[in-house]
Image 1 (cartoon, rainbow, N blue to C red):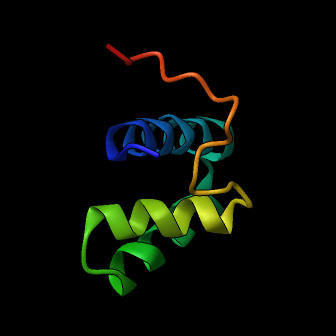
Image 2: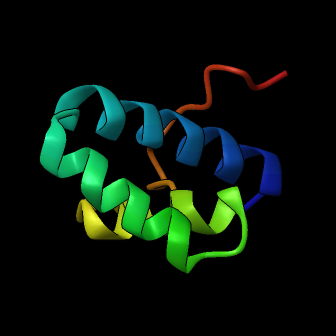
Length: 67
């Protein structure tokens, strides 16, 4: 599994979580993650896990940014 494919997948899934769940509760939860993780990447990973989304792309996921 390539690192580029994985980061593209995670970014796409983070956008989906953000758009689908943005409300006051989500904002509060997000701020908790920011306060308890050192990097933006760690926050994004924790956000996916908290939302029940696998941090690894499924075999059939097509990277729209693949060369």
